[in-house]
Length: 281
Image (cartoon, rainbow, N blue to C red; front, side):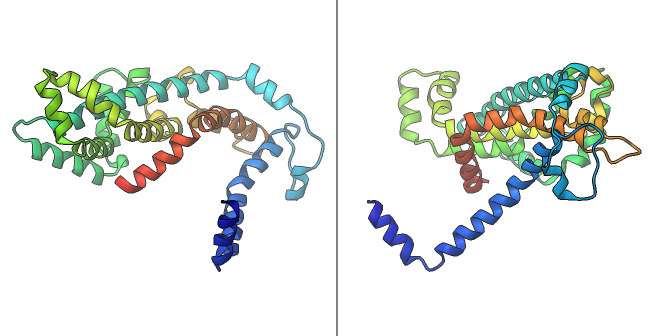
């Protein structure tokens, strides 16, 4: 088996080029992370015009202890995690219910509603920021968890992806369940939803990452420093008058840890999700 794979690689005249390109691209992706880690363990206030000096002693971990115990970064990390988690759960529930209705139920204006979801994909998020801000303000939800979460749970793309997935469920399965007395909710919860696990995983992963990295909406809707998320909290470590990299890099390293852990746990699902979204999206 190994021998056949070796012979197959040797028959590919571009195998060496592909491997070389893969290594170069991997280095381009990993190099900023390595640079961030080395800069984060330099003494606070360290500056240099020679990039090589960033990778040479002295090193210290006092930046991490100062950030963890003398700043609100743990609070911001918790805010980001809670908001991303709740946003993901609510998005999955709402998009799956909407997609099930559009796919398996018959009602008036069904096609018109689906066209509205398609139109929603064509409108840039930035174009809806001002009306969204006014709506949340009129509901007195600014500077609160609901104000951060509720505007982010609308996902037209998720509805369209799940609808196309639900449309692919064999009609024989649906009809057999209905003949056996399965209600609409049981059909959704026990039959269709388990079959859509790959699509749900893809949407959930990208929703979580999108919420974790979201900057614009938290920046506009949050006033209290205790409600900051990581994307709007980390820039506070930058100085307006100097180019201090050490503390922002240490903060970025701390902020990266939860995402790296999630990636290591759900690596397989993330790769499948990227493949799935590439095919369906």
